[in-house]
Image (cartoon, rainbow, N blue to C red; front, side, top):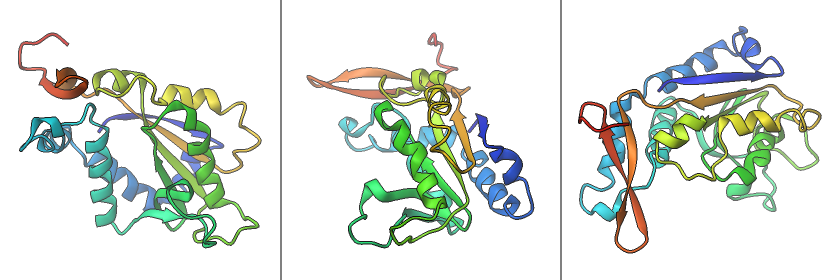
Length: 214
């Protein structure tokens, strides 16, 4: 996958320091190792038996590919931030974590951008609630505006550009380094929505060699 980055509190510089470089290199290898063909195959596989099973966007395919690759590298998936039983469940979980790095994959509604930014901070700061994990830096993976359009994403998702808008007003709350990664538009395909049944839309992969205008 191709992407752009924004470094908050010098995150990218810190990630290239000796204490972090091994984990960061492993992270980049996962991201760089997912091809557009991998995404196409995963997305089209959901509708292999029943077309109504095809998602509207490629977000599910990307999420599952990331999960497979990170688990292969022994990253913790759906890692709880706190040990206290009062603070369990999806709200209090990171998507992935390993040693000093916590990761959130954020393809959800723009109304939760602030929470997506705060969760890696909770994982990295000391807290009055007993912690289950203690990281030092956070990475957030999201879609750029162009990926939102070409990848079939819902119009209300929080994009890379919107995440950057949230950083200045949250400056004093976001006390740890954060690397924001924006996935850019695929080069070899796009997703076009097709109506299926009365209300459901599915995402059809259109390759750029199919003589269809992007």
